[in-house]
Length: 245
Length: 262
Image (cartoon, rainbow over all chains, first blue to last red; front, side, top):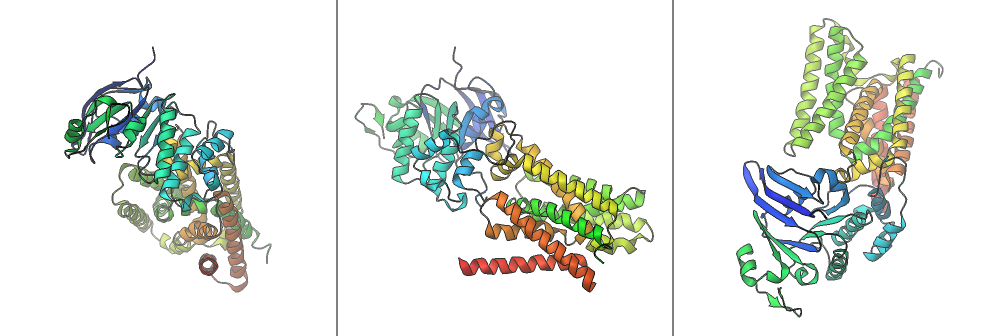
C-alpha cells in the first residue's frame, strides 16, 4: 500500500504561547496538486515548515511520504516564501544550481553542471542567465533559479510557498503549466494567494486559518471562500463545470 | 638581516596564507564582529594560562573557540539583539582576562605584546605551529570547498538536503577562532580583526567567485604582511599597525578604483 503523502493527526503548533496551528488532521494521498489557501497569519508558511521538519509540532503525529519529516526531507523540494540564501554571495547562476545538487561525501572543488540542470534551466527559461552573478537577479528570475535548483534534484514531492509572488504573467503561466504536468507524477503542495491558479492546477484545496479543512477543488464555493477570508470573493464557473475563481 | 628575521618572515608568510584563505569567508558571512569578540575573549584564556601556569597559546585557543561556539549557539537560538550579545561576549572576555592578569603580580608588563603583537619576536616553535596550521586550513578548504560553499550560501536549504551544515559551520568558526588567536601573535588582539577581514573585502571588490576571492585575498595578505614586515625590519616601526595601514590603504584605493571604473 502506498503511504500517504501527508498524514497529520491532532497536530498543533505553538510559538511564544500563541497557538498558530490548532488540532490539524489530514490524510492526503498525494495523487494530485494540493493548493493551500488562507488569510495572512493563518499559519500556511508554518504548516509548510512543519512538513519539511524545519520546526516540530508541539503536539500530534506528522508523517510525510510515510515517515517523519526529518527522515525524508532530503527527498522534498521546498521553495520558501522568502529566499533563504545569501543574496550577495559571489557565485554564478549555473554554479549555484549545481552546488544545490551536492551529495555525499560532499567532496571536491566544483560541482558539474549536469544535463538535468541544463534541461530545467531551459524549461524555466533561465538558460541565458547561466553565467550571470546570482546577486544581480530580479525577484522573478531568482524564483525560477531556486525552482530549477529544486527540480534538478528530482524530488519525490514539491512544497512551494507562494512561488509566483515575484513573477510576471509569463513566468506565472510557465510555472503553472509545469506544476500541472509535474503533479501527474509527484505530489505538489502549493501555497498561493493567486486564485486563478486553482482551475489550472488544483485538484484539492486546503483551507487553512489556524484550523485546516481539505476540500476537493470542485466542492469550493463562494461561501467557502467568504468564510475563509472573511471577505466576499466571487467565483465563476469555468468551462469544466466546477466552481473556481 | 633577512636571516636574522627568517622566523618572522616564515610566520608572516604562513599567517598571510591562512588569513587570506579565511578572510573571504569572514567578509561573506559577515563575521568581522565575531572575529573581534573571539580575539578579545582569547585574552581571558591568556589571563587564565598566566595565572595557573600553562601555555598562554592553549589558553587563548580554548577561550577563543569557546567564545565562537557560544556566539554561534546564541545566534541560532535568537535573532534579536545579536549585536548586543556579540558586544557582551567581547567585553566580558576582555574583562575576565584583565582581572586574571591583575591577580598575577608583575605580569602586566607583557600586556602590550598581547594587545599589539610583535611578529619580530616569534620563535622557531611559532614557525612550526603556523606552518602546520596553514597546511591544515588550506587542505581542509581544498577538500571540502563545496561543502563550505553550501554552508555559506544557504544554510536552510543545506539542512533540508541533510547536509551536516551546522557541523560545517561549527568547524569553520573553530578554525576562524584558532586562526584569530594565531594571527594575534603577529598583529595583536586589537588589530587582528583587520587582517581577517580587509584582504577578503579587497578581493570582494574584484572577484565573482569564492575561489577567485580566496586567491586574490591570499595575494593581498601576502603582499601586505611581508611588505609590512620588511618596513618594520628596515625602519624600526611597529609591525602590526604597519601591516594594517598597508591593507586599509589598499582597500581604499581598490574601492575608489572600482567606483571610477563602474
